[in-house]
Amino acid sequence: MNIDDFDAYKDQCLEEISSLQKTFIELYDLNSYENWFYDHDIGAFHFYSEDGRNLYFKYIDVGSFSSRRNTWMWSWFNKTTPRHVSKGLEKVQAFGNAHGFLPLTEGFHGQSDEYMGWALTAIAATLISGIGVYRIPHEHQYIYFIFTNELTQEEHEALVEQKNQQRQVECGEHGTRTRAAFVCQHLGTDTNVGFYEAFESDPDIAPEDDYQAWCDACELERRKEGEWNEKSEAFAQIRIVCDECFFEIKRNNSR
Ligand SMILES: [Zn+2]
Ligand SMILES: [Zn+2]
Image 1 (cartoon, helix red, strand yellow):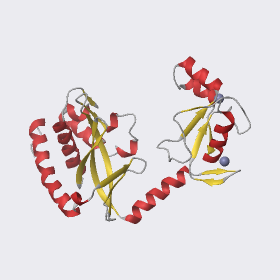
Image 2 (cartoon, helix red, strand yellow):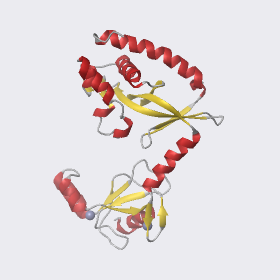
Image 3 (spheres, rainbow, N blue to C red):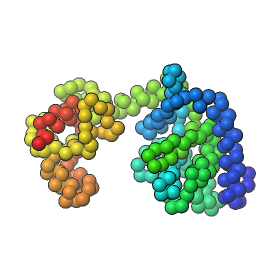
Image 4 (cartoon, rainbow, N blue to C red):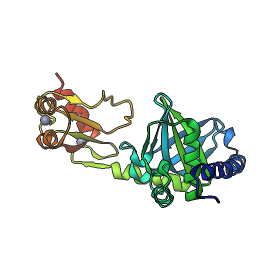
């Protein structure tokens, strides 16, 4: 491969990936799946069809293109992306450094397009030896993925199981619960100190994030600081409780 010139290299990678992709889509009959879901916690992508078929892949999150701002951000530069799903991209950065290819080493591109998103994904997939690539719309963005290997149903279940175990809380009152919550040190089931939460919690709706709540005094502190920072967090001394306790705390402290 010609690796002296970024544009030439990029075009070669795109060509290579497009033929790989054709094989990948045919092999897994990917277009026959109506639905997908990805889970950053375990780094697994799940395709599922209405007739009950499932397909799982381990992935690397490459980055995202904002169609509103026409910007590109590598996942390793994105603070909200968990590090374990951008693992592997160091190889791409190192390659960029060795060849002086700035698009591979600069985390944020102020001027980009969808095509460039595919090109960067193609380069990364070539360097990482991905088995396929994928792109999904997410609000005003496209997120680009590289699939590294297929997961069997059992392997996928094991990852989910592992994740649930990590989330487990042993509560003296309610036993083993699979959902943890975080509350400030002042909140208890027998206190009445006000109740603020990160998002409107509902015991009947599975939250995307962990439950988090704090009291009046912590809210004052947070406002004084303008945010949750070292000082306001030190004041709150967040502790972990089970979800049942969380809703009991909510009932008793809400005003
Ligand atoms: Zn508090
Ligand atoms: Zn509890």
